Image (cartoon, rainbow, N blue to C red; front, top):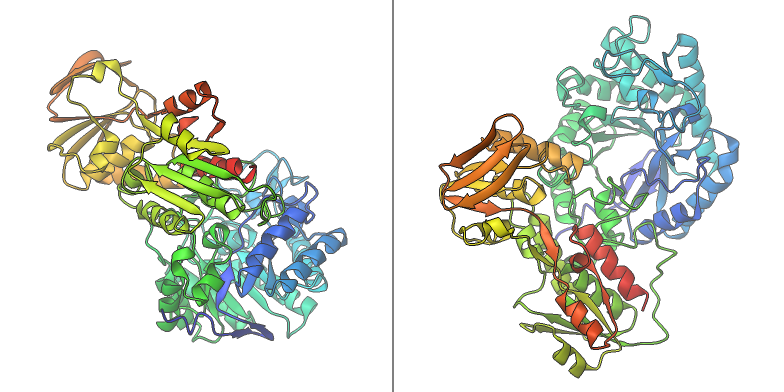
Length: 638
């Protein structure tokens, strides 16, 4: 694989960066409650610098406490922040990276619970901005904010950062001034394109005056807000030119705003590299006078190289892939592609953050680097593992810790439910994850035995010190469905033959994905769901796109509807409005009632007094993030 451009150096103003890869600024929620840097944050960023990325952009960092948008946002609003920020830059530099920091003010996105004052608005927008606890900025307020940005820039330079980036994207304050959707002012800061640019350019000039001509100052821009009345690409090109004309050193191209953030951190249904053509348009508009960076599902270096080679951008911005695998750059440069942990674009850990702050569905060490160092155990054991994704993670972690592992898999290929999970449209990353696990466990200290169903007898014969059970789950089959010829959604995804008209019982994540899978094949599909909404268990950004696709495919949905009985070609149903009735006209009945734990082996091992720990779906059916985390924790603690 040719990576000559990707791993060539580039200069931004006076700063030489060793390669074209930039770690995107993604808020971690690792800061202290007062906005200071923590050891957790330092360890997290140092790990990514160690992995070889050229430039690390530290997350959105508020220039004023009243602009803090997050529960645990990072601050650069006072000199009290300097010691922590300095420790952060020194750690990144010690690991071979360059450090940039993104200067941010939330404006209307500020968090009222943590920002310590009224929310500052560019304009009131009916139905969008709050009226209580908020006020529109006066011209004097705006002048004070310019000074705050300049002060923050000076602190960033003093703390050892190599570059500052003005956050003019994603619905934050500078973007709010730039966008006609949020800027409805009729004074010198609004009413025309030139006036909407006034405040951002004043901020740029003030920051430049603070840090000097040789210090890199860049800007991140949302060049398409996807909201109909805000910025679109055509309107953004003059903005990019204005920044270039006024001395910006690089343009970082992104998309999306507050109400359209599903494009900012896109799920896997959006094409890889979907912003590259937008970056190319910006690069052309500024006559390539300044480097242009681009973000948006660029998850592997082969795509990065193509974008760079085609002249669409000068730098490639990666966020989630470097959370999933901090060593992506060094592995890519070495040609060790198969060992790179794939990002799923699932947003389950990095955005949804179910465990309190940023983590990762496939990398349980993300944000926990100090708690879980790469060290060998002093007491090696023989560990027997039985089961799917949670078991694969357990087997790998145990081996990495120095244990000898025997992995038992009842089927003839590894991966368990990942085989079905990758079949719906846009779920291809789950097959990449399965193949990654297959590659990762192919090592001398893991004895993989396919086609072997774990039981008490064969486990006892192996004489393990401990057993990790990850026997997973199986589809729920209600009593009223037995004998009806109903198919499990999992079997349909794996290729079970279906008719032309399908009724799916259950509108959760699996039911909706199965509906799309069938509808894309030209089948007529109806989803019946007891709750009042489809797929409430789905990650929110992914869900918005999914529901829109189901509508476009003509999938019928019956909400607040209960199934009373089924027979071939007929379902007796009841809803609150129409009462009981028959639903007929379908030739395939599909069950998507969820999963139940398969825990028999665990019970049998306990009865036989064999030490065992359960992980994954055999405890409680869940998502990949839970399975991987549990498998990791169980094995790491041995």
